[in-house]
Image 1 (tube, rainbow, N blue to C red):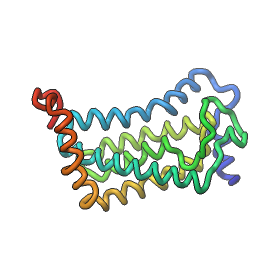
Image 2: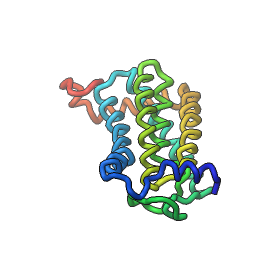
Image 3: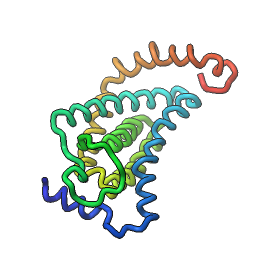
Length: 199
């Protein structure tokens, strides 16, 4: 195991005498902050206009691509989690799946980087980037990930966002106009007609 990765893990992982309040905050950061992503997708899509819907769709596509790449990396180059080695304190139950790169951080960062590509959603992207920091810290603190897993996500996410952005004209826009919006109008037309959600 890389010496720097292990040294950073020992620095950030929970000491045995961590106070209960800090562990509670870490659990919330590790598992609950990411719930803002589906909430953003649902609320933004239902109540946002085209300047929000299109970036959200692109960010979603980029995130799916990033997770597919993350899965492939895990299959081809499976890296253990700290509790599988084992090293450090382990304070949150997690399946013994490949750790590199972190899927939680991949989702947060891919959404963030993709949304920063649009003027209308740049602030939202910046907020997600800031929120990704406590997620990364908490998952190392609780012994679920090594720092290298977070670095892997940081490397993967902007690539997925950039590649999806490059494919905007032939992938995102046709999908948005010909498939997603038609399905959206078909399913939500009663709510749209009542003015409860945006067209």
